[in-house]
Image 1 (tube, rainbow, N blue to C red):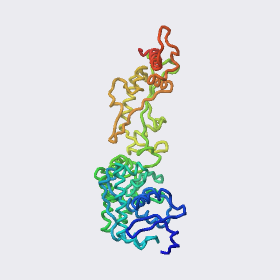
Image 2: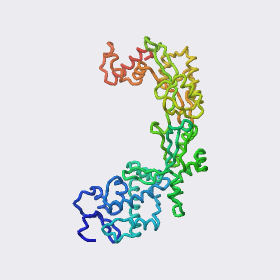
Image 3: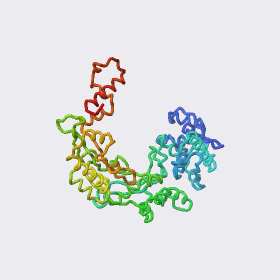
Length: 453
């Protein structure tokens, strides 16, 4: 290559298969790239594949980044990244045909005449050894390494189940699609393809192992989830599907099983968690209007069914209790319900409301309820809640009206009583320390309420 053309290039390949950045006056490369390659070919290549995903590179450096991206793509296709440590890394390098194809697409570069399959394999192995050593120093699994460094590589080569709302159909208002992330974009974001495309991409005996590797989490998940097994056995998992609320609810119930198998799950963004919101039984406790609060006071309490802080109407409550699909459309959103569990909790509190002197309870009992240490009628704690298989309880939330809520804060935190008993009792001949003053104020506060202090 003519010497006068060297200014067009940024990296050189030596006869022995090492890469060296060329000196240049143009601000093409960041100092981080230069620093990485100063530590050797392996560090430079690894840096390009991990940290320079979204940067614009000259053609020769872009080509070598492609090799690094290929390595990390293969790495992320391995099952069990969450448990895989440095000693577990066993990545099959590309076969001869893939090396040949990669060599053919190489752009003009300094030292390009030395490029062959053996050189590519040597550099591949150097990336592997460098990453393995860094993983060992970090003492982390592969997935932990990527997550703690906020690198999206842990999402590549993984199957993802997407559940979305299908607003164009009343009968099947949900849509399902299984995808897989086959690469990262130039901005470092995972790029998804329908799972059915994997059957085309990995067709042929030589790529059979890659296909089996990709689908291993689906196989594991179908062994735990009967619903997923039916999708796999019928082949429907490879196609877009329109679902009824009942089918969508079955899918939601098994999300923990999919995730434990290594499958990513995406649900509508309007759901704050992996599940739609749930209605909740809310018990409101408050004092009678105009009455003084204290040990002798009687408190009113009422039972409501609420959704995200808003009280549901009798009609909406009846719609929920009559539903049989597990999901109901309430107030313009999908709501997860279990009529039987809600009936149990509602029945429990409604019976207590009727039995408690027309919805009245003593001040002391009200305080116990609000602090979570009491239950009317000395009934067992388990009667207040009804759990399900995912560990979430369909229970009651006991809340206080504003005046009572402030009182509860003062009972829980003595330091809140700063305006009570501004002076020490007249017969006290001592100078109190700050914490003692707080204690005296709290005891005085309890005495004023008639709570026995």
